[in-house]
Length: 366
Image (cartoon, rainbow, N blue to C red):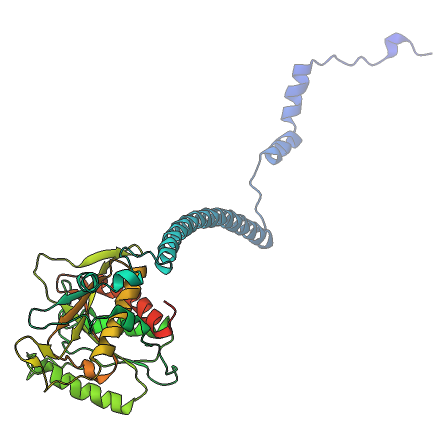
């Protein structure tokens, strides 16, 4: 048996000594070097994947931001559109209200047969008599005027209405020099457009300048030049029933012939009828007109309709002593639309109610 004294005695090593011993070993230094962090270097394939992932992330972020902006813009546009629609609806409601008023007779004058049979009442409320001419109860008879059938007989497969301008150079406050659309000819274009597009009539609009001679304004023979052209057009188009010589009036510069119709500033209008009769000479034999009474009936029926639906539109029917080419058709008128003190828009606006009353007369639906 081994005795305790025979055992090898191992010296006691303190922990601090053991640590110092460990650090002296080569393996410790090696492990320490490996334990220091080094950025990992990816291979090219991994690097490309990282770049692609970053691009996809950024694209997604930009897309999200763009979608948000698009949504905001869309919402803004929707709000603006809704606001515009509300304003448009309000405007249409007002126009509808005005239109309903227009299509419902609301005369200011007493249009009863009894009152219209009163010559003085008729003369004072519907006519303006030039000092150079004269009329009488037999000539101005409302019952006879209203009894005359002035409806359109020709369908629109052929020309029905002719518009022309004896005084093509007549202009307005804001007429642009050289721009025909801002003269009375432009007003004629607009009237023709309304009659064609809204009412379905076949219209010829003659835009020749009859009041320009050798490049200068000269109206001495304007009606003669106009008559020659109109007669040619009527000969080529015998189907034409209505002839309109469209003018604008001349008034003192401080007079503004305007009213409001359907919410628009509207020039007032007036028919101008020639009686081929003067106070000094009696009948003007060299200007015969077999259609004087028909012309008067046509003008009166137009004003009669206007008095019912647009009481402020008509200024009256002006009676003058000569003929003014009204002998060319029974349904011929010389229309004074506004004056030189009106704007182009005001006069063009007047063509809308005028076209309406003309259509009422021509269809007999007034």
